[in-house]
Amino acid sequence: MEPSETLNAEPKSLALYQRDDCPLCDHALAVLAAAHAPEFETVWIDDEPELEALYGARVPVLRDGAGRELDWPFDPASVRRWLEAP
Image (cartoon, rainbow, N blue to C red; front, side, top):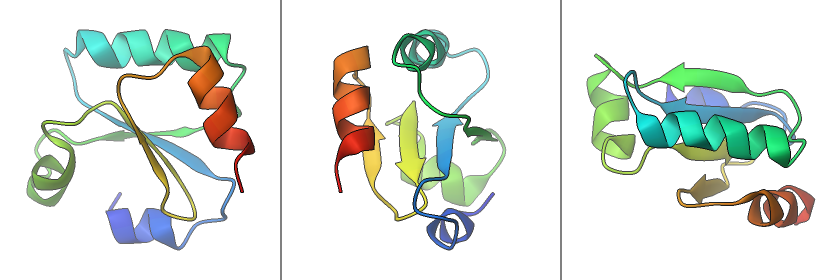
């Protein structure tokens, strides 16, 4: 998925940008579960040059349809605050 496609999504839609073999990404999944985050799409950045350039050093990154991004590190409380923010 291209970042521009995520920008055109509904504001409440979520995508988690991550890569294979990423312990931080695995931890982020557990944090999102603990935060009771709504369903989200997983976007694998591996072998996607544009996504690698944007997110390679930052994964995991949670992005909403309005283009807001929450970079790692995050915890359940910060995820909930971010989701509730306008």
